[in-house]
Length: 230
Length: 230
Image (cartoon, rainbow over all chains, first blue to last red; front, side, top):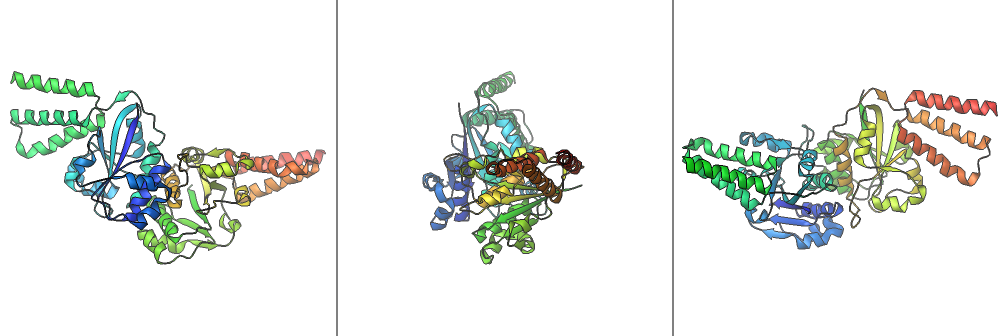
């Protein structure tokens, strides 16, 4: 079974970067590109895409992140070291590309990898959508990478990944598990001011663990049993 | 002792690429850039270099490859898969970035990494200057990478390399060893039409082996002894 990698650019500002991203995607054998509210894509995007104009043409353009990650089994947000500092209060463990590769080896399913705006990266709501956070280790002196360079390095690492028979859980089922956990938090009168952080922690733990479908079902079974006992 | 990495761009055609190269060099903490007969470097180069304008400014501009690799202990030529096919008759073993990293781990000295023209890559004479050939594994469908993407991926791999105490032999001493071998070939009446290929083979073997200074001296001692015996 294959491991499909989808690249999602969230509100890219410069069409030259979008073109360069398609080129490096094709260099490493990837083709699934989704653009969330992109800038205009005209001559410069086509010029930079070079012989990858087919990928530029077939990119799906959507207006929300929800549409962009539809059908993905796991959603990965890419942020620079600077981004990690900014979003520190969301306290997330993060992975470097080589670790991501190790984690995905032997899996099958669709992995959506998100890249934020050239200037602002992601906002907090967008980061909360992510199951895992990926960062490219860069120099502290100048950590801000060009968008297409960042995509290139991630895809370079993933280009020779060995997929396998272990299916990633469906995003839909993970969503149900998450809702179910949310209900449980209410049932146990979990303090409202802590709930969001704790729910995000669960999301990140499950993201890191790369749950398989059976595990999701079992977890939901456990939660259901707890609820019935209370 | 440090392992210094020098990036050499041979006759780059597009100033935007040169600027992008400086940016990704700074992202990964590298700063030594040499340009052999570059295109004009004006506003677009500065724009693409972004906050790495210091590297663009301090880049050395030279007119020959010989000047560019002066003082380097080892010279590495980077070529795409397409390039490998074109230069097949020079029959060279080649390395991917991860293997290069492994080979250089624990070494000290200066490594010059050469990147060719955007359209034509290197010519054969330039390739013969190289001790090792490096290639980035890409898709057969579209193997031609943007210059700055290629530099970025190589530097990404080398950015966390652990240098060590094992000094690389001096390029100057390696040159003497090579000349000495050339003399020996004459002494033994080696067929002239095979000599160039065999000499290149020796160069590549020594390049792959990452000779230390003592080994170069010992090899020269052996050659001298053979010559005296004959």
